[in-house]
Length: 344
Image (cartoon, rainbow, N blue to C red):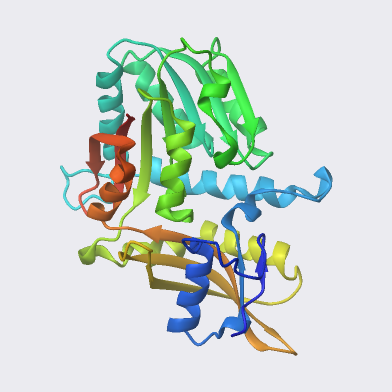
């Protein structure tokens, strides 16, 4: 069996690797359900697209553009009063975000919190922080954790206006290497850890569960955001990936990994993947089709993100007994979801 070229992890599969990484599962799903055979698929670990490893700082313009593209997507979401809403009085993305902020304020009930952001972005963060402050929440300090080194300058500029007297800390590392217990004194306030922008969908849910378990201390809270797979509104998933910002993101990833000058055609797939517990979920795959004289038509996978249904999302949050769900809000179409959970 010929394995496809991979970037960011070894080409061979270690016999001791259990379970298969989501990257491997995505790779095999594409080969099983599309016209691309294994040897014509180029996949990357999602994290590679947000780092500049091995390159000089002067060559990081693409990371700055990636950050700005994600900001553009959040401006569209937070700025809309209709996204996800099915009636004039229904719940939009913005309303669902406001409602989960109210649950956070009720949860902390006047006690200070440490705001910890996994994968910071100024638009949505600014909206959340302002809303929490209006609801009387005291933010003791802010900690951002990101593998993209270009995010700190943007975040500092935005947050210094909103939180002028609050200590700001920026940590450039991967989520699996960060421990809040190492960053905060033993008697420090409880934290609100945010993981927004569908980031959880970029890795196997068992892996993400372990990261979050290790990051959070008992008594800390997790605020997460997801795009769910809802049978009645499946079309919302390809619509999101058809946004010009996502298509530009896909092209940037292709240029960095394959060829800056070669032409490509944007492709999207929504395919099933099965986890080692037997559950099957859908994965959204964004890529660039390109041609080479050796292999003909090929596919570079620019992004992949799990789209769990609501029951699955709850199931994997509770897996292992590390978190209890304390609050949830949804848009009317049940495709955009915020969840508040407590580390046990």
